[in-house]
Length: 298
Image (cartoon, helix red, strand yellow):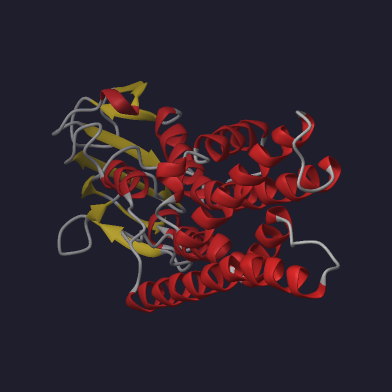
């Protein structure tokens, strides 16, 4: 079990998965969860249709201008999805690191509860409840259990985040050990108390993978505020076109504001940045807790 730095997100596999997930999240049903980004998505779709009409000869604005606005809007929506996907990827990487460390562990299984008993090296995943294992200095405890013989200093920072080692010994209330922790000195004979797949590390993996990011009350209030501001700006921009047409008719000169320009103005007015990165910021906060070995359920 490693207690080093958390796994990096900037790996080819993580980036490839994030890119694919960010494209999948362009689904309008998914975007409905975020009203600000849904409006941006609608603007991107509308300008795309206008660009196709411009290519067909029915243009309200230059095709290059419509294409530029459409590309920027699609990039905004995609980048919001990518930032959220990358933030979520840390939890997946952390869980995968825990799982891979479990696969790599071997155990010294003893025939009896004493150090000089016959030893056989086995895969840690094959250990059963009641088996006795010997763990010496520098080795990783292969499974949750109780110390039956010996006393040793144990590094539990991999699961608790506490850098100071603890003493584990047979008898008393300091005999419980956790799979994935490391013996720093001396040796221990441990009786396995949890079967493979049901230990503390396995439960931690399940918690990390099953964590659901729920909105806090402040975030809910902020989302309502952003939605209200978005509605106000949508109404304001929607009234600009008839006012523009009226002004052109009254003055007898000029041109009516294009829909593309109004969409671009709307996206500039609504709080796009906050709406796009709010969820990623929340998930990044959960990630910081994971790096401190605190499992955040929400």
